[in-house]
Amino acid sequence: MLVTDMHVHSHFSSDSSEQPEAIIQTAISKGYSYVYFTDHHDMDFPVHPAAPLMDFQLDFDRYCRTLLDLREQYRSQIEVRLGVEQGICPETAAGLKALNDSYPFDFVIASSHLTSLEQGDPYYPEYYEGKSYVDAYREYFASEIENVRLTDSFDIYGHLDYAIRYCPDQSFVYRFEDYRDLLEVLLKLLVEKGKGIEINTSGINKIGFPHPHIETLKLYRQLGGEIITVGSDAHQKENIGSHFDKAEEQLRQIGFSYYTVFKERKPEFIRLS
Ligand SMILES: [Zn+2]
Ligand SMILES: [Zn+2]
Image (cartoon, rainbow, N blue to C red; front, side, top):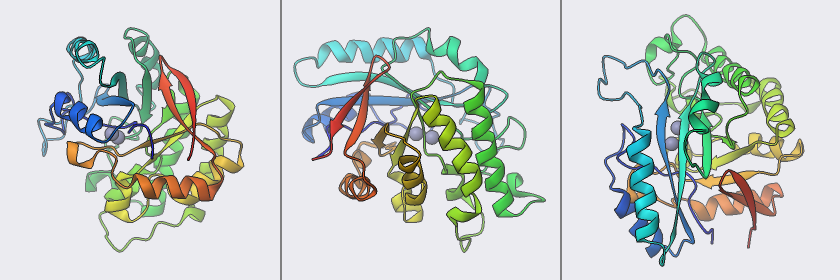
């Protein structure tokens, strides 16, 4: 059994209404040693007219104050660790450091929800206009490469192939080989910089495999990658730890002996049982 879930959202994220205390209670009931909060912040996020409340701006002061108070309150039962999911794109990536250095984070996920601030959101059909789906996702991976070149201020890169879950054509089949060249560049860069990736189990329900695809996880391992966190990307307490048995099994099959948690931005390696 894993000791925690490294990717969880509460009502501090625009797309969640979950109470932090309910998350803590769930983590305690699951027997976790730590509970992580990784709420969304997407710098300069272009609010879409179809979803005016989704601005993904985090009130950092209130967020940190609330979680640090909860850390004290629950000290005898579970350790509350302060994380954040920073959405970045090439226009904003360089701004990450100043933000992350201003708060006492244990763990920073960098994620791509956008390839650019303009027409760069793969959630919406406009993103796919005038290009094939394969080109649309190649553009997504290329922007991740650019982000990693632009900043070191993160611990792991989140859900590496997240965009593919929003393909407007349900019959589209994702083939790792169509992106292998770009993924190799991306993963090599992450390994060189000492950065991790996650196995994000939210993909299992949505598209039948985790983010990223198992072949991408294998490639990260082959390239010498050792830092892997496990997260559900739960936006409701019911999804905390979802499909973790499967994730553990997949990591073992790939050849990982350890998974990683972070405290004060430093990795701690825990043996897969
Ligand atoms: Zn995300
Ligand atoms: Zn998330």
